View: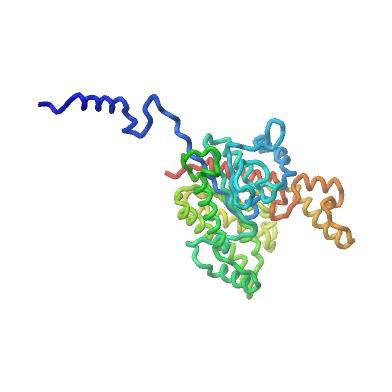
Length: 393
């Protein structure tokens, strides 16, 4: 006698009707829904130049760039006001509030911008998925100590000698503190992503890339000697191994072994640095700058690392702004000699020059003289490199 009965037949009909709902985990044909795309997450890390000191008053200068001027339109609404993007969220523990839509004011100060603004705009235009920028940066921080990661080991050689010198001078250095802080901030943001990204529905995220923009505090020690030992120069020589170790540890600690990483060239001084170094081998600052840029490039060429890229940025240095900076420095010395007070309105000796200086930036040399155009184009270049990047086969 057959064991097949009407109850069994009814159950089979039900299974056939539901079909792929059980087999593939997808809803039945008449109840399909488009899955919510994962959030594209980008890490923006470094020191003060990733924090951003581009003066907002100079951002319109981006429109005058002969090659990239059209990019300014990505930062503005149709009425000419600065845009706020609801498709790109930025999170930075140093700001209040810590999270919000990408717009102006996410630099170090409320009237400053960094690479994040145009970087995020480029990513927002490219991806249909929501974009999250996690910014984690602190001014005056180096890789040989502050960002030193576990696999770099304890400081030795020049690194240890300089730290000993600094500690004896009253500086108390906590090796690796800001590496640990960086990883902690990234993890915290990702753990709380449902509270950070508006409309998040549990769809998950992809660590789509990291942009690293840092270097001044590893470079600026170039002149330091201890007992005739050129410690500062050797510090630059150690930069590639220290940074490569940090990248390996970042990927390990974030469980993102294939996350692409881009390194923004330290473009302070522009191409003039190469000219100075070539013409005068005794120009210590210029020679050290070129050595440091080569050290940055060396990380991208490290055979033990994949998907790490060097991004040139010296092209974006504002040569005219630097000319004004030199006039300002000379005028400052003259003001001191003549007893003239230093004010915002007499940074340069004439109103016309002073106005031009402010319109182009007006901040410290190591902060790209405050050029918001320069910071924006760095962000553009970092984003474009990540979008060009393809996984190695």
